[in-house]
Length: 282
Image 1: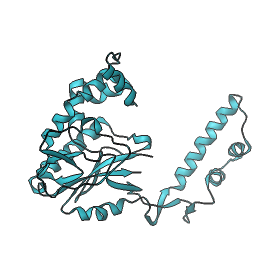
Image 2 (image 1 turned 60 degrees about the vertical axis):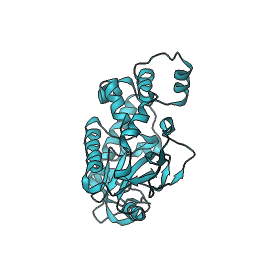
Image 3 (image 1 turned 180 degrees about the vertical axis):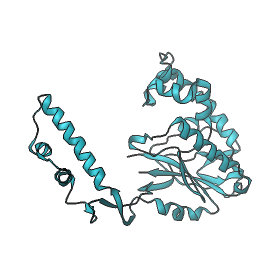
Image 4 (image 1 turned 30 degrees about the vertical axis):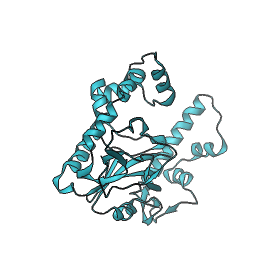
């Protein structure tokens, strides 16, 4: 399962619960067709083909796998794929009550992204949420006097330029590229500690295809952005979140989402609205 950051844009922070409600994974909806009978049969045929090849390669099948080889009609194959604990309609389509708009099963303001937003100390209506045992942004939490980190604030009060400056001050993303993309051997104690404290899930080719250059990588990673955005127009995200914090985003989807995110933040009509960071789990 995964955690990800969500930016909620709202006139009133008290509206956050209501705005998130339609995306609750625990909601049961009216039954809808999840998998058609034709898709079920197609999957059964693919299984059968796989078992045929397994036998040709000298593998021994289990009894339930052998049943696929004994099935000679689509209907017989369909019955092998039909499960007692699932619900079907009169046409044999598998039904589901799972909320198709599910985005979270738990959330809290702040959490792993606690104190992600920088404002001046004299801002009165900033929002503070709850910290998590795991802080995913602590590498740039130092700030100058006169500023403070919070979990939400009016967009007009957020110090976006200062936040980007602080992200860049210790060359975090430059070092990340050097050590994980260019495979530079760590020489200093700082670089060795960096390797110990950070994890890289991708191969070098991913970064080169996605970002091209070290300079563009630093630019993209230094800007303020979240995985998803929720405003009055609905839910927007860079990609569908999967296991272990890995999403299915692409270079194109990241570009589209970044443009949307920045468009919302720069919209003059939104400057008096709140931006609140929410830690979502799914």
